[in-house]
Amino acid sequence: MGIADDAVEIRARGWRTLAALHALIEAELERALAESVQLSVVEYTVLDALSRQDGWHMRMQQLARATALSPSATTRLVTRLEDRGLLTRILCADDRRGIYTELTPSGRELFERAHPIHDEALARVLAEAGGRPELAPVVHALQGSQVLAGA
Image (cartoon, rainbow, N blue to C red; front, side):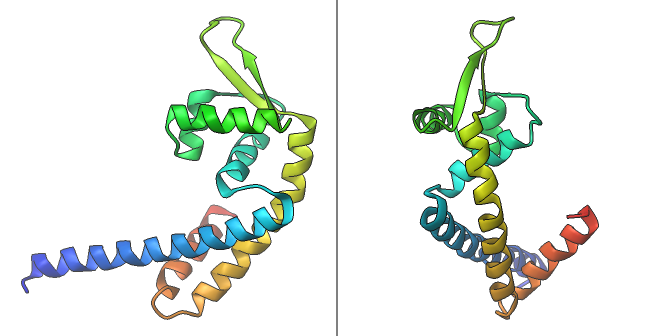
């Protein structure tokens, strides 16, 4: 195997490690959120993104980017959360084609209950993953970036 082949394998191994850590985290977050507050990870992500708007709202395409979903998947998700009374849609006054969404008081209350559950589950799964030799380097890199980012 040549140097170029080694570099490709190193990148591939890194990607597999990152994917394994992501799957582990996602599974634990799904379990904890579903069990405690009947939310999926992507539903939590929507509530989280909207909660950061400080009383303002987001355009649907901004929400799609924040959740890494397609526009149609975002629309379906927003509809489900709207049906549950957790958020509401608002037509843009300047552009009737533009649609915003924001948390309702019920959505904010549910997010405030879910947030510590999410954070505890994330801390728990990262601590567990940090003890696995194959995942530890990625976990430590994430923890180092959190320190640098002030998180």
